Image 1: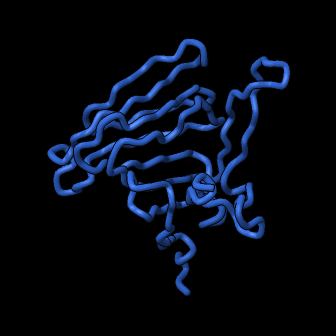
Image 2: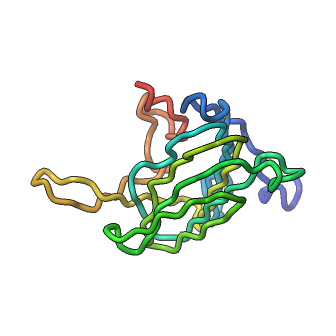
Length: 180
């Protein structure tokens, strides 16, 4: 084993079951789970057609970056043919709608509400990369309370919650439970 081998991570092909809008694989670098002391998280996916990524507004305690580019890495601009809708704002009741129509990166500062995120039109595949500045992150979302009012709920991170279908495994955001 080399002196710096611990700094190299080989991606594992992770299958997903979200639907025909995405190929049946995805890749993740889940910070601390993949490399001790890492303060970075990344996911890599391809969207082939229209789909919701996140329907409900949420925020995180760290920065997040959303990267959208054409899937052909030889020409990410020439291979772009999509329209993506993203909502963002400091106040959940006063968010702005943004339409992404060309290769774009969006910086989401800590505690900034974002989403829904919807692929409205996809003429050519879109490469979507999500980056976080913490190895494990969690999502805060607004939920309806029993009294009909709104409450803030920490829904946890994938690295901290078990698989819904097999509690002995860690959630990998494969989407299989959403089909049930």
